[in-house]
Length: 141
Image (cartoon, rainbow, N blue to C red):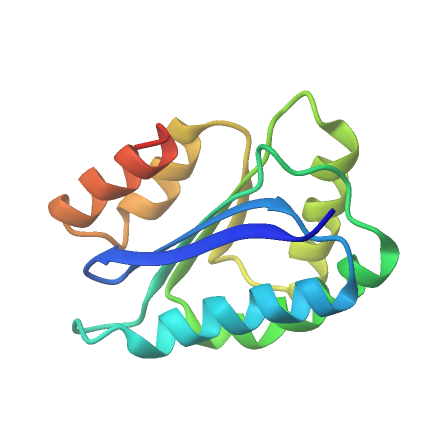
C-alpha cells in the first residue's frame, strides 16, 4: 500500500487537500511539501487558505503524526485559515488531529466534523468564488 493524497489550487487562494492515506514519515513529509508548494504558488492577494479533508483517512502511525505536528507549526504563519475535516465516526483520528491542532497553537486552524462547519470557518477568509469551490471540493466534486 502507498500514500494517497491530492493537493490542488483550483481557485484563488484556496488550497484543497484530500488525504486518504499517509503510512510513513516520508509520506507525511511529501504531503507537507506538496501543501507548501501549492501555498507558495498562490498568486492572488493575501495569504492562502487550506481546506484539508481527512474524512477517508484512518488514524496515523506515531511517526506520521509526529511529522504532521512538525509541519503544522510553520503553517500557522503560512495560511490565513485552515479547516481540517474529519469523519465524526472516526473518533481516534478526530482526537489525534485535535491534539496536533492544539499543539500547533493557532486559533486560525480548526478541526471540523462536517462540511458546513468547515465552510463556516473558511468563509471568514474566502471570497464568494473561492467559497463556492470549497463547497464543491467538500461535496466530492
